[in-house]
Length: 92
Image 1: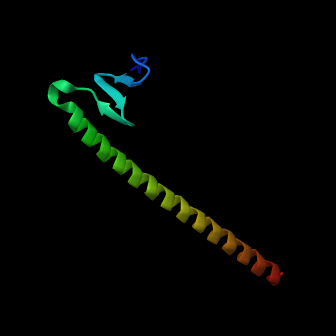
Image 2: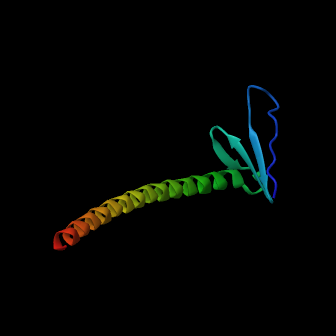
Image 3: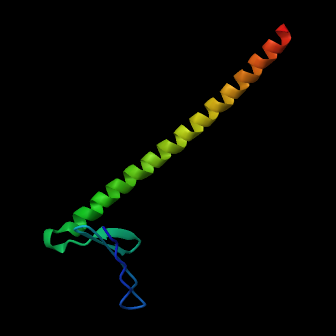
């Protein structure tokens, strides 16, 4: 599948037209809209895109939290390793 970029027809109203397979999307007013006027697809696609964007934001937030938790666990593991090495050094 190839994406296509169309140059703006007028300098005042730039747009990006992207074709992916059978889907044609247009970037207007800072959002991607499915350009399928025959089925009323613009509105449904815009709502679906908003829903996907919200899910993406939630997943990104969850990912950040998980990265933080992994970092904390690594710090705890490093501290435990140091404690273990100190105990081993005291035994010898």
